Image 1: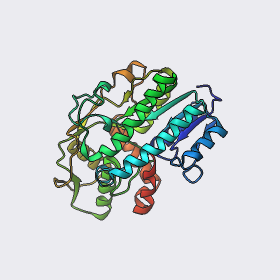
Image 2: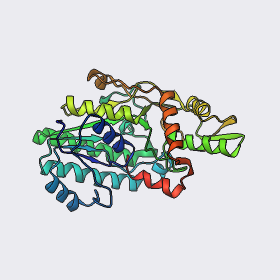
Image 3: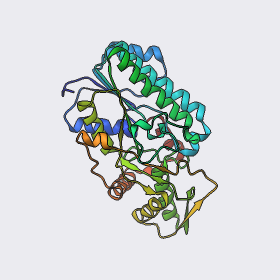
Image 4: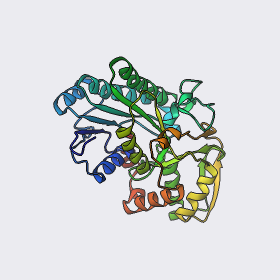
Length: 324
């Protein structure tokens, strides 16, 4: 990408999209194209096609998606499958029709089979059954990464796909029910501290292991991949390190400053027992994460406090779940 290249960031208000915008601007890219949902409904095929015809973006970061935590994913499988499929395919196809130079599609580590060998290599894709609790979301992501692959194979287009691990950071969705594990857990510990509660309940058994990546580290990786990688293979992005959810809870308790006990609600699903990515391919491109988990959590908690996140109503927080 050149500094004056026209770059469209789909989903620029979400966790990943906003981080991409920050990273691009910090690097001196100013010719950025962004649209709110009110300005451009990505589910409207004609509107998306007209947008690409008019704006003719040279590069596209496709970060728009409907996202949510484990229970939200499980409860609304059809919505997650349909909405993520329709919005992403509209953008990918319009980028093809209107000759976008390069497109980077953001997938998810949930595309991999439930029993994939750990750490998960990119080659594990479609090698076994998916985790049932987020199957709808995963199938939508798989279909879209395959669409990028097929446009590359059939037409020689430079459409690539990146699979990030679990993300957190500024701009995350802190809704008490619809959020992912880190923002949801951070809210519960903070509210318990403010109320003087004696305990905090965490979903599941605490035994599953998860990998977490600060979203600004992801954005830096995406710029590296966009500039230095061309190919049909997907690329994982993560730290290559994982922790148990019990360890995460204990770290969160310390960072928030909560003095009470941690209890585990075993009636809630655990999901996959372990999920950590093999990140050797992205490391070979010269990228490494800069945030440790502790430093990233501290920075995120400070950001949430400074922005009054925990004083927001649940309905306000829920609006953030429309984009990654």
